[in-house]
Length: 500
Image 1 (cartoon, rainbow, N blue to C red):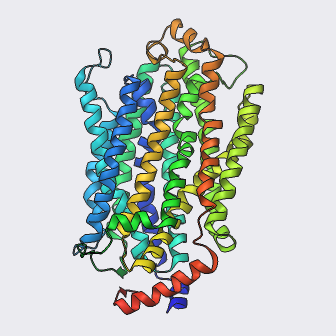
Image 2: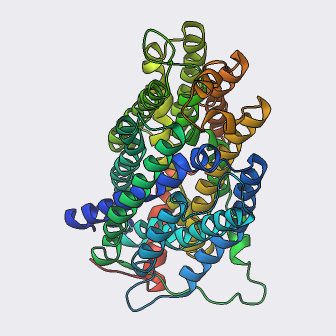
Image 3: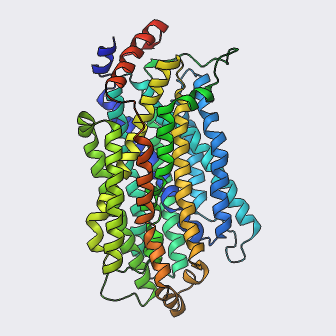
């Protein structure tokens, strides 16, 4: 039974493609928030930096409660449409609406900073996070019930993540492209238009695609609903926290928060790092707008190419190497290349020379995004093998929380850097006169260096830290094979059905 499970293919090609297209739709929307919310809050709404930091951190504290709650709901309730399939359909419209509201100011005064602007931002941001959790946790839990074959599951996740990454790249590129068309506007107005176009178009296109996860997939593994804890039985949370491999993956994911900065910090670096593509520094607002688009485009292309290149090669790497090995090597390589980018870029002031190193630095984006999800699924199998309980929803919620906390840490790090080097966005983004141009060009060397570090050494150190817990991860080799083989037999004994 164990050998058969590991070799049989359960998910047909059309279903795999539908799930991946749903991931594409999710990627279109999620990248709006993950890549640009900091720039929008700081440089468009010009919100108080301390407020933004507290909003991000407190929202993540709420997620620490919200994500596990969603996981428990999934584990304890199966609807007539399935355990996980209903959620993408139910959440698609609210997420689309909240994404638009997150980047389109309905009329609050940003000059006087009305208290209602801060209330509006808080409500929308927290609501978006809650509804997104209700879609994200079930969606990325689906491979656990689509196939019992761990190799097929890993490839399914890798394929969906790769296609979803295309959605993220489209979203990241859209404001940059629009920036070229609005370069003659003042900086404030150009920013408003860029983000409005991004949010509306990505929400309208992305969320209908996301609903394919409801209509075009099948839950083949029928696991009984989780029951209330019997006397003397360990709680669900205790089982989760007692699973050493899972906790190591979670810790590694949290330490890898810097990987988000390669994309999220790109617009900030483009604005304030002092790099420009051309023979001289920009001398007009139009030239500044174009240079912001140019520099951001170079950084984002490097991030996308490095990320997608890694994703495309992962299925082949899975055949020869353990997940653990792939993660450690990519993280260490990312750290070394980020150091090279910092040294070479800062000494030459030539961003184009840095491109090969930035490409290598971006490889961990694709590796961690894909491999960590596959490792979480393996850990859930290990926990089921060890305890007899399958806490799919709660286990997957750990990964969802890690992604959110990582994104929040990256955002906070960017804002903290603004505060440390005293960059006043109010003077640098409003108006179209010579004063704005002069203010941007006259930023100090320290301020420029601080911004450049956000896409170089800061994420590099984060990647190096990410690799440390993985040295202690031992769900590999013969131990992993034994777990999967014996789990298949135990499922058969417990009467868990697996549909073809």
